[in-house]
Image (cartoon, rainbow, N blue to C red):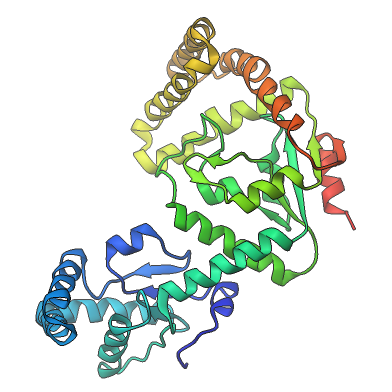
Length: 362
């Protein structure tokens, strides 16, 4: 395979990417299919950078060759070759498609392995995604999925072919209680995921993209301004579910459902207590907005529910604080937010009815 500038093809095809930038660069932002196997680690990159500023490019190259030699060079070559065996259709890149990626490519060629590189590197791919993101957010047809907390918007989004799961991309459930184990992606990673998803949607055809009604932030991930504007202005479909149905969904999504995820992250022995801590901390984060008396009451009910669950596995007591939180706190917030939306309501019904409507819209 030849080196490529076909950035759209790389993202549309989910092509494996070998990122040879330093770990600190990778952590700031990367692409979903990229693996980080650096030519220079963070310390080596720092030292080479200082040498470059003080003595120029050739002196920096000489230092790099000195730092990555012998067993260290062999180990990095072994890792790159193993990656290539697993991803024979992959490409490699560095920040600008310059010295680091070409050095990696040359070392691999000397070892009898050819891995093509992405011309322009990370910087060019990132610029391509930002340009496509801006264009698609302004021009793609869009339908906004609205509904009060607990109506199951995310469940519906996950079932639709033409939907973009913003909360999934942000690894956050989109409320004060939305934090998940392992934290959130960087802002750049979030934007990259969104840009790639919209690029794929544009490539599939003309159907409107369905997005969930979100505010400025999903956890700490900032929703791009152009998307915020489209969410305010686009036509919407509203899920209308009774309170008790929403209590059940909230119980499943925030209390019983996350235990598996917490078990995978913290281990089964710690999962429940970690989740309990997270629920209590989430309630404490909205204390000022709840008011002292209501917060104290809800915290007491949550603690009692957790205690009952801890000692007998019974989760029914959770319905008390969830019901009060939905009806007394989240529902008024939703009603206020809906008044500030300009888009017309295309359809309103139960989650099943909305699913049917969206699945068969023309």
